[in-house]
Amino acid sequence: MHTAPALTTTTPIVLFAHGSRDPRWAQTLDHLQTALEQQAAAQGRTCVVRQAFLELMEPPLPQVLAQLGAEGATQVAVLPVFWSAGSHVLGDLPALIAQAQADYPQLQVQTWPVLSRWPGLLDWLAGQALAQLSE
Image 1 (cartoon, rainbow, N blue to C red):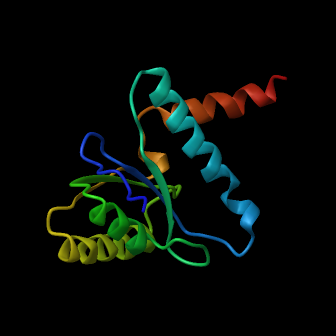
Image 2 (tube, rainbow, N blue to C red):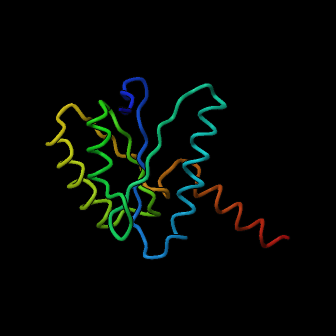
Image 3 (cartoon, helix red, strand yellow):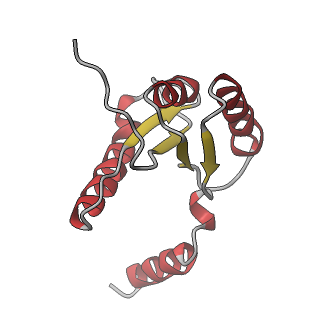
């Protein structure tokens, strides 16, 4: 019988997104997960990355947090893959996290900023957009 390894040496990252009826929509999350894992490996680090969804796709966030808690994780970082903070990020996400922490009291969940709040991202994107005009 195979059991999942304990997650005590690294903080898992959960990519939390809305979900879609079209499975192609999640390809970008697959690419982000791969990029995180590859960059961590290039730095000699281990990076456990999971995907979770609010609706329309599987697995839902409560299931992923429960799995991580059952595997022994004590810290989890949730990266909301949303452009800006609306009701899903400001209301739904905290409620889902609170429930997971009630079920797994040892689980500390840190929520990272939405995409538009990452330092330098807006300036980088503006530069990319302007570069398109000059090509």
